[in-house]
Length: 248
Ligand code: 1GP
Image (cartoon, rainbow, N blue to C red; front, side, top):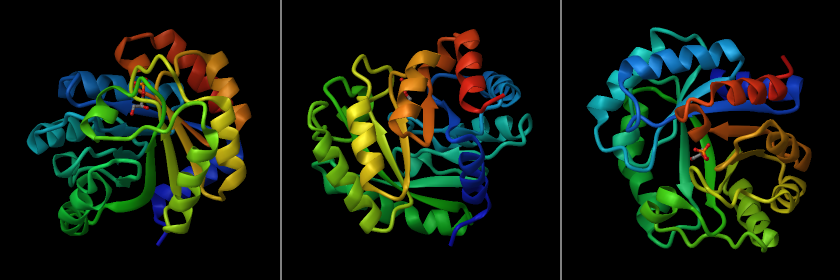
């Protein structure tokens, strides 16, 4: 069940305490730019490149981006799909996710059922993940996914959803504040989730400094994701943050 990419991530977490994954949104970059960025991120020490975004609509464009990244990096490329258009045969693995606190069943099991045969046909490694949207500034992810976000000041609700994800068999749980969020996931929620579950805790949305990364790791995050920081070409900040997380 646990494949090569998952083993690689787990080993790195065991060694480092926490790791960094870089998120590239195919809507925001050309294939050339994506591969140049991915290469820089690999050199900085980021553990994997995630590719996806809430508004991805063209599988053909996604394929071109991933092929281009693949030419330039050796770290795994993991899909972070918003739906069927977010699946590419050129990736190494997929965060096969359920948006657990959506009010629309399409985002909980509908898109998953439609996409599952394609994941099988492409022989993508599956990383089962519970995706939970948190806070009041949840951006495109919250809007498109029709989420009923967990209030930031109700960490116990976050931990209930995370525990449900674990009991449903997911091996990762992602606390998502929304890309570019002004209200990132709180340390209280991260530590309560971490103390409630045995699966790996991913945190993303609005993380843009090393200090903030330190706070999140101290609270218990296993994996930190940054996207906007990369796109805004704050490469120096990204480099510091990655080096801190990956203990380089
Ligand atoms: C979005 O959590 C990720 O899914 C990344 O967020 O763009 O704010 O880094 P940022």
